[in-house]
Length: 119
Length: 111
Image 1 (cartoon, rainbow over the protein chains, first blue to last red):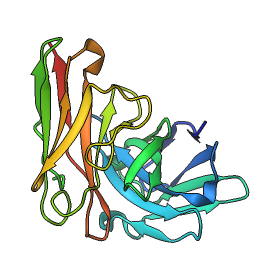
Image 2 (tube, chains in turn brown, red; image 1 turned 180 degrees about the horizontal axis):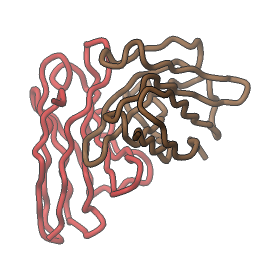
Image 3 (tube, chains in turn blue, brown; image 1 turned 30 degrees about the horizontal axis):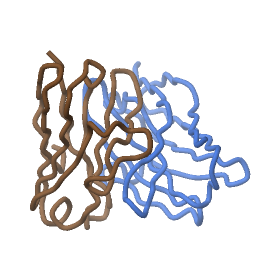
């Protein structure tokens, strides 16, 4: 069965960086893209970006350009999302999700990783 | 501000039907049949309930149905059950650079 398993919760100080991992199993990793979606406390879903696990092409949300980098390691079927220069409003649960391109939807999601930014 | 507009909340009694709307533009909802709906219980990850406007993934109850008219998509839940109480988000393909946009979410309360 398809599973996306994310790394554990993180606490970071303002200005620091965080790198969240998302290990995929149960399908051919390079056949699907991975998106990252975050959710601030009590708020809705915010699309952060997408990466092709096939060729590494990326597409980032404009508001995060320059602070976010998404990568994949096909040898371990793992996707990564690094966010730099953290601010308090980056405090959120970060989800990875498999993108089903033919239907433009997210058919499987990771369990989420809480990132807390606090001094 | 989210790209797709949803009501903040809806409610219904057990057994009743409710409909959640999702309004976009001709650049997203109205232009493509790639609307999907997600259910999110507190503290849990979103779950795909509807894709391509009206298709249900395997395992999703047939009490959930989707439709679209013009720039507005709708999710209907019939025979409401207590377990349906959750937040619901719509999303759509968009011709903008992000390719996918979300609605702001709707909190469903089962009275």
